[in-house]
Length: 291
Image 1 (cartoon, one colour):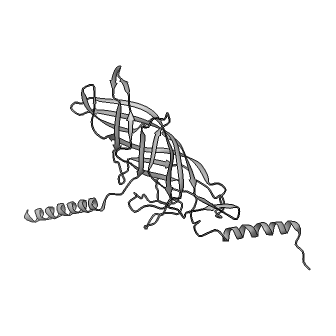
Image 2 (tube, rainbow, N blue to C red):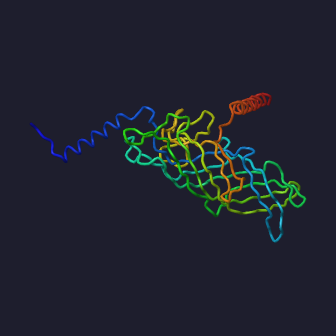
């Protein structure tokens, strides 16, 4: 009769349990660690306000107060804000389906902010349009904490993507910005620089891209994109698409910045542009024939 030595039996048992746990992972656990990348966001109307209060510019005080802001589109699509997730979010160290953790905190950087006043504001008897962008000499950065949905399986935690979303995320960051007030009826400009700490206390996220989401493709490891399959109609299982999120001031003020994933241009807009281009080409050709 053959006997296994106790230490060998222990190793075999551990391997056997790991194999059983791995092979027995339910079909719903098909998700993955999250790739580093950039979130392309749009600031929607009604969700973003900033109270400038009274500011001093060149020795003169100006009472400004509350300003309603919307996105000043830069692109691609309707993008006016970009948040870069600087590192991968690793839940599964060994890619074996067993999670070492269900929540990960990663650094982030705001790489684009382009807002404008929803309507002109009256300051000292004059109307001004307001434009907000990131300060060029200061980095705007913070952290994001991402929690992945998980289920228990034979004493372990494994990914769960059986729900409409794949988890929740929070964020805490400081935005350094310049607000330029341009007078409507004169050449007067006022520039106000400030910093603002914003906190998102919780929003949904998903590995799955929606049909209307702005997709920027690139290779795995490229931190400037949000879809890590260079070609085709699908994105990588480890990609991250945030749901609508509200970021409020850390001091408890109800005012802040609200975003959602930027949308691609509507098909009618694209068709309209193509039609205009086609008509332009047609008239140019007609004109060339008449010469």
